[in-house]
Each structure stands twice: as structure tokens, then as C-alpha cells.
Image (tube, rainbow, N blue to C red; front, side, top):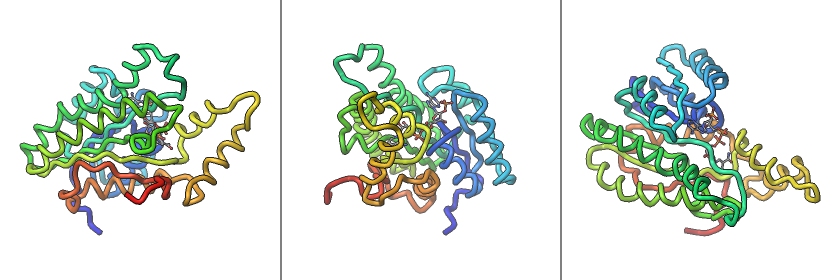
Length: 260
Ligand SMILES: NC(=O)c1ccc[n+]([C@@H]2O[C@H](COP(=O)([O-])OP(=O)(O)OC[C@H]3O[C@@H](n4cnc5c(N)ncnc54)[C@H](OP(=O)(O)O)[C@@H]3O)[C@@H](O)[C@H]2O)c1
């Protein structure tokens, strides 16, 4: 299927590793010029080089920047002032007990998982509507549908983003600007490895046992491959997806334990 987006411009946060990088690679394969943003230069340069090597016909730009910081968002927009596609993505929080979280912990979570993405929408959505094409994707988490008891910061902050986009998406779709949230289940990425490592305790199972038990609990009996996520995201950015908006789309190997 031709996605019909060759020549478009995508601005992707959190694009040096994991699912964000896979989205950038897949969009580049579809002929989209990609601007990759992440905080750490080494992996970002490596990701940009890999995409350039795989897709020499597109423009690949790398910007060191933080989605949670005004200067990071400004640097991203300076490199890609009029994106047709926006991917919001940043770190999730570490697990913990809500009794231990300070206001600063909550504000950091809200900046990464709610306000940073909302700011980027504020800065780009009017231009997209004026140009009559826009595809905005937020990488969220299954935690907005299946609350994870140890991830209260994610359950809370991400739900704020989902609630906000539900209203905004219905105002933009008449201008061919869609906004959707992608809800990953368990994907084999650095973030998953960090999460499992944080669950290891002296008197409990080790990393490998925890990793395998999480994998075994997925109906698909495996972790998701970031490339599968990238392909789904690319379709949602396509010309064919203009009637899909305001959705919270699980990609979880069947983990969501309900019919609806
Ligand atoms: N993997 C899973 O199973 C899973 C499941 C549910 C939800 N999620 C969520 O999905 C999102 C992506 O996960 P992933 O597994 O792909 O993560 P990952 O492999 O750790 O990659 C995260 C990417 O985001 C960048 N990043 C992090 N914070 C940033 C910020 N403030 N500004 C700009 N870039 C930032 C990272 O680079 P730098 O660190 O260099 O900035 C990296 O490129 C996360 O929010 C995660 O919590 C993941």
C-alpha cells in the first residue's frame, strides 16, 4: 500500500531508541523527511545515521532537545518549523508508591507525559490545519486502560493527555488533522529493560525470571517488536487514515483483558 506521504515532514520526539526510533525509520521508508529529537547526542546520531543509510533519499535531521523543556521544543521547531506529522514521546516514570512522591515528582511526570506533548500540539496544530494536513500521534501506554499499580505517575499523568486530546481531536479533524494516542503493551526496548530491572528485589525473582514471566503473560507469548509499532504508526500518518481520530489504540499482543 502506498501511504501517500512521501515528501511530508515529520517531527519526532523520543526518536533515538525504541518505539520512537522505529516510527522514524518506518516514516523515512515511506519517503518522509524526518527530524529526530532526543536528549542524548550519541544514540541520536547513531539513529540518524542508521536511517540515512537505510533511506538515502530522505532528509534526516537530528536535534538534541528535551520535550519537557521550552528550549528543547524551540530547538525542534527551529529544525522543523512546519511539520506535517508530530510524534510526542518521552520517558515514562519509574515505579513506586504514591506515598513517596513529592509535588516535584508529579510535576516531572506531568511535564513528560502531558504538558510537553500538549505544548507541541499548541505550537503545531494551527499550521497543520491551515495546510489541511496533519497527523499527530502520542505514544502513551496501556496504563490508561489497564492501570499498573506500581506506575501511578503514568496512570495519572497520561490520563490527562488522553482526556485533553479527546476534546482537541474533534476540533481539528474537519481540517484533515487527526490526533491519536498509541497505547503500547509490552515492547522489548530499553524502557522495558529499565522497568524490569527496577522490579528486581533481593528476595524476589531475578531479571531473567521476571523478563520471562512478563513475556509469558502476554497472549502473544512474546514482547512486541518496535518495528511493528513503527508500521502501525506510519499507517496512522497516512493519507488513508484521515477518518481515524481521537482514538486510544492498543498494540499489546492481546493483553487488554476485555471484549470492549
Ligand atoms: N516498552 C514498553 O513496553 C512500554 C510499554 C508501555 C509504555 N511505554 C512508554 O512508551 C514510551 C516509549 O518507550 P520505549 O520503550 O520506546 O522507550 P526507550 O526505548 O527508552 O526510548 C525512549 C526514547 O525517548 C527519548 N526521550 C526520553 N525522554 C525524552 C525527553 N524528555 N525529550 C526527548 N526525548 C526523550 C530517549 O532518548 P534520551 O533518553 O536520549 O532523551 C529515547 O530516544 C515511554 O513513555 C514508555 O514509558 C513503553
